[in-house]
Length: 157
Image (cartoon, rainbow, N blue to C red):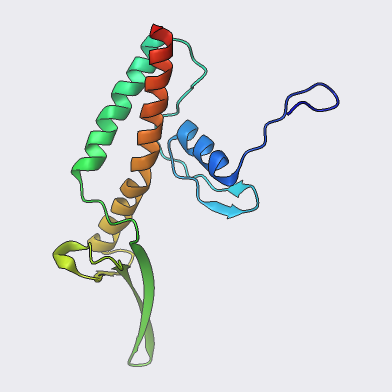
């Protein structure tokens, strides 16, 4: 869109803006409120500079993303509908909190609907959080690889 001052303006849908943030920074960007997303720092994420015309840089990014994608796919990935729920129980007058991984599709190990994870310090809980992060990174890496391939193919022509 061209403004009355002759400048260029681009309007993004929520999905377009979310994908732009995720594809550029390489980390999930959960939606908070109108045009507001949150991004956590991830030291292993590979920032992608798409306007870079250096073929060597883009090939290196492709190689790193491809190996990162293979590493993500080797580990267990929870189903798309899986969520972590917080529960509480009262024992001897004291409230205890614990967590469960829940899926409606029975895609958890052994065909279960829920998996007990324990407290936030338990190994099961930490493994489940890492698995959920892997699940969220897979589609981001796939989009980034497709975008790099398109740029590299455009350079070849």
